[in-house]
Length: 126
Image (cartoon, rainbow, N blue to C red):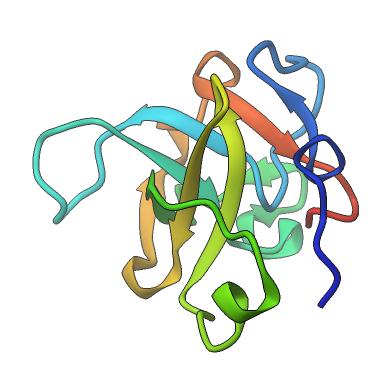
């Protein structure tokens, strides 16, 4: 797989447009996940847009995975065999994170608000 530069990975970071609908790859902060303790955390939507809606309405729960600090993936060797995460380079203030696919769960849709969304992926990022 070709490496993707951080600026090409994201459509928006920080101030994300409130008019953009929820999509696969969106990252949120401040989400308390059932079964993961009481501390709010970052999550990324991993559900396909069709799987999180019934018509125009969101389903009550959306499939997400936790996002945590992670070392920068710098080479193909670092990436090979590491299919349990999605690196999110320079997600916040130049710091590197990754989505942990081994901990996929469901978050209440009413917590995934535009005010908590901190990043959206580009088409290539998705």
